[in-house]
Amino acid sequence: EAAVTQSPRNKVTVTGGNVTLSCRQTNSHNYMYWYRQDTGHGLRLIHYSYGAGNLQIGDVPDGYKATRTTQEDFFLLLELASPSQTSLYFCASSDGQGAERLFFGHGTKLSVL
Amino acid sequence: AQKVTQTQTSISVVEKTTVTMDCVYETRDSSYFLFWYKQTASGEIVFLIRQDSYKKENATVGHYSLNFQKPKSSIGLIITATQIEDSAVYFCAMRGGNYKYVFGAGTRLKVIA
Image 1: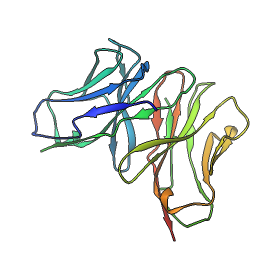
Image 2: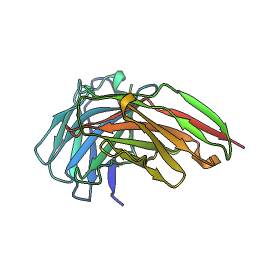
Image 3: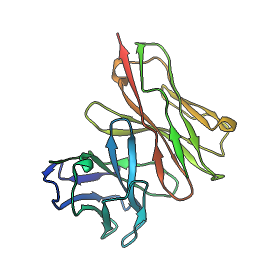
């Protein structure tokens, strides 16, 4: 079973703060994704990547940067956090070849005060 | 742009009965993949079942099956012989040629004894 690990599991910051969420997958998947989950909206795609150095814009990218440093690691950056970014963030990965399913991490709960 | 719509916010059923959850999607892609995921009470997101757009046969896995109606852009999830443990939030999702996975808002299922 594919493993996707997110850290931290919980994070509290203040408005204007700088936050980095980390995601690592250990199955050599090509694609990695960042989603946010909010009541009534389901999972909304922030950014995704198909390999180291690549970044694709998702559906709700405003206020977020992301960087894929290696095949395994994908980071989500909030440089000036706002209360509207309080949410549950999920990272996911997919091999993009055949299996075509997402493997999810356990999520990071972010609170911006 | 891709879009996935789940209009049922919540459903309650009696244990051991059958439930159907609705999902409609929008895409311009000629080939795409459709998925259902389950989010448990712990927050874990688990893959359930997938339908490839070019396949006419409805996918079935265990007590999960799909009702794929391509002309209506509809992919319903059918759970037979429901169990208390099936209580969860169910998400419909699709992936098109751009490797974006787009999710619906989710349907909360409650199975009562």
